[in-house]
Every structure is written in C-alpha cells, then in structure tokens.
Image (cartoon, rainbow, N blue to C red; front, top):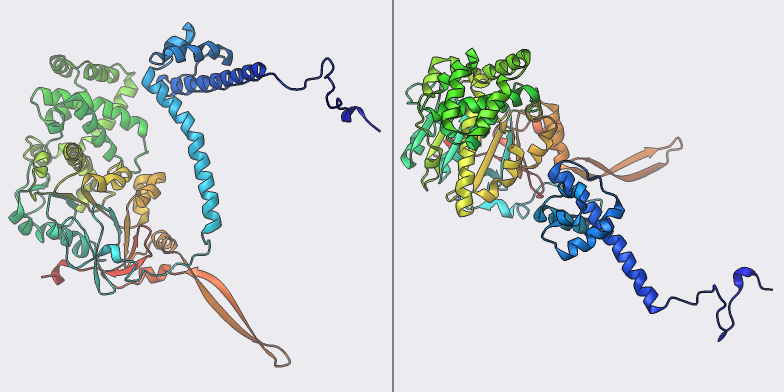
Length: 559
C-alpha cells in the first residue's frame, strides 16, 4: 500500500510538472550568491552599528535592507566606508581604520570563543580535578633559588636552606602588622642591595636612617619631606607645577592631586573630585605658564579669583585651558561653590608655610633618576601627616612613574631597573592605577614592592578593584601576627586544601570491631597557624608555584 508521503517517480521516468528533481548549476550558483550577499549584509550592518557606537557614541538609523548596496560600495572602495552608506547615516560611519578594525574583531571573536570552548573541553577530559595542595619543595622553588643577592632581583628570604629571590620585575605585595619585619626584613635590605634607582615612601624614619648613608655613596639622594619632620636631613623641594609645563601634563597632575585627596576609596565622591580636577588644571597651568607658585594657586582658589586667571590663560594661549576654567566659573553659584570647596580640600596642605615653602622651587628632577646611576628619592612624612600630604606625595610618585614610562619607551625597558617601594601603600601615596602598574611593571624594568597592614586596608582604598590589585602582584607575602581574619582566611584559601586520610574504629554492642577509612579535604594552612608564625617568618604565594613558608633576612643579620 502506498501513501502520498511515499510517492516516488519510477526510475527513468520524467518528473511531472511541479516536481523538482534538483537544481540546475545556474540555480545553485544563484542561491549561493544570494546567501553570500545576505551574510555579507548582516556582517556589514553589524560592523557599521558597532563601530558607530564605539567611535561616534550612537546607533545608526540603518535597516538591514539598506546594507545591500553598501556591500557593493565597500567592495569597490574599501578605503572610504562612509561613502558606501546612504546619506542620512554616512556622516556617522567612522573612517577606514576604526571601521575595518571593528570588522576584524567581529570576525575573530567567534573563532576565539570557539577555540577557547574546544580547549576547555579538551583540558577537562585530560586534567585531574582532584589535585591536592602541598607545601613547596626545594625542587618547586628552583626558579627562585639564587646563590647570593643578584642584580635586578628582589631578595625574599630563605626556605629549605636556600636563598630565594623574586624573578626580575615580578611585583611583590606584603601584608603584615607593625613589628612583623616588613621594614627591617624586606624594605631596608632591598634598598641597600639595589643596583639602580630607588624610590621609597615611608612613615618610618628607620628606613631612611638605615639606608641613607649607603645610598649616598652610590649616587644622588633627594629626601622629600615638605614638613621638615626629619632632623639632621636637608629636605629637597618639589612643586606640582614642575609637571605643568604642558596642558596634557597639567591634566594628569590635577587628576593625581584630586584622586589622592579622597579619604575613602577612589570611587567616593567621583563627581565633585572630577570637577575639582577640572578647576585645578587651568589654575595650575596658568601658574606654571606665568612663573607663579602653588601659593598663588591656593590664593586663586580661596578667593575664587577669575580676572588674573583669565589674563594668564589668555597669554598662555591654550583654548582647552581657557574653556576648562570657563566651565567652572559659569556654573550656578551653589555648584561652583562646592567645586571650589573641594579644591580647597585638595590643596589644604599648602596652608602650612613649610609645605608652601617647599613648593616654591623644584630641586627634585625625576628625569635625573634615570640617567643610568643609582640615585634615590625618599618620600617621607610622619604618620599623623599622611592625610593632608597624600595629594603631594601621590603626584610626585606618579610624576616619577610617568618619567619612567617615557624612558622605558625610548629603550624598551629601564636599565638599570627601578626599585619602587611603597610602604603604607594605601595611605602615603595611593596610586589609582596600581593594578595596571603591578601587571606591567616587569616589562618596563620596574621592581614594585607594596606594603600593607592587612587585606582590609586594600579593600578600603580600592573597593571592588581590591582583588585585582592583589591578583596582579605576582608574589604575595603574608607575615606573622596578622589578626585580620579576612587576610588570614584569604591566604589560607590561596594555599589550598590537602587531601588527608581519616581512619575511625567503632565497637558495637556485641564487641565486634569495625574500621573505616575516608579521604577528606582540609586547609593546608590554618588562620591561626598563619597568625602565630614567628617574627620574620612569612607565607609566600608566588605565581603558580606551591606555597612556601620562608624566613626573612633582616638587614642587621647580614652585616
């Protein structure tokens, strides 16, 4: 019995009218061309929309059907994408470079995602998922073992009787409370050993006292102490205006000053600090261009001076600076007053005559740090002065880093490398882009060391970005005595879990004995074990190496 669904023409029989025995070659070619045109139109439409959104900030009022002629136009003249589109949207289509860059990214993205998925699937079948954590052996630590302190490598301590040093340029994050050995066991030895320029921030005079003589024998030394708090040391002067000879440099300096003035995280009161930076930039630029000092900038802010500033900006002749100042002065009175009040907060350190005097000239020249010698810049302040001096210190350190980037760009990397030690990194000179600096320092020839009290200090300053700051440091070292459970718990989690065998024996009511054995996971390092390490001992988590317990080498034990 045959049904309609099973009907077939007999072999050799001619297909009846309306029955397709297959497409002719010409019809097949036409179908392929039509499909290719449709796919090309979709790709071109997507490229135009995405590139316009990214580069022009808007979506195009463009229908898919409008892109059919655009495909042909792009094929005929790929150098002018806008010319291929209808006139209402052509002005919104970016140039050839952004358009074709977007096109390339859109084509590559599916391939990258597909490759990643396939790789993940392959690795999931071959990798063991039950790896047990363990302490590093001597063989594990081979990349870090050195016979003696080596140029360009930061000495960490000892483990298994061997001296350990970070690989060149690998950034180090240290957490530990007072008296845990951060300064005498790490910072001071690093500064004493380093062959090359050093920049060190600290609230402790012992760092300066125990390294100043040795560094003076190696090269030039500058001590930036704007409050003259350190006895028997001649402080060097520096003014933020030294970095304000160009409008671009002034914008950076204004941003650095305002970002560091915040008491909480870098995201607190973004609106007002951003507008304070917009006000300070033209004031700083006008002062630098006219040979004035920071005292004049403070006076302009306090009095909300306009006439003098307008005159100096007109003489300087930079339209962007003139417009930036006008943007503030033309605000509604209450908003303008709030912006000026925020700027006063940023500049409050200059109310101190000592600080204002230290900014009258600039003896510190960051470029001299990178002339090939072993010069040193100390940035120091008493603990109780951190908050008000923070904008100055941050601007100075950022200026040094910007100079380092420029020198590295000329030669690929700094030679000799720079040692940057940021003690109390959350308070003295907090750097908003610290996560990026930590991840890129090695390639630039910068050895970064950041020192903190605990994990909470990082979270308070960097907010949701704190995990990235920690992660981008290749090496993490937690020292003894940390009572913050967030710090010790996170450290224990980083060390990992070990699989241990548990045996238990039971006796039933009839006296029969049975034994059971089970494998359980437990943290290799406990929070109490981390806290109760001996002084000058630390837990080292380094890249993908197993964690290690190390002992620091205080500088006074090396003499």
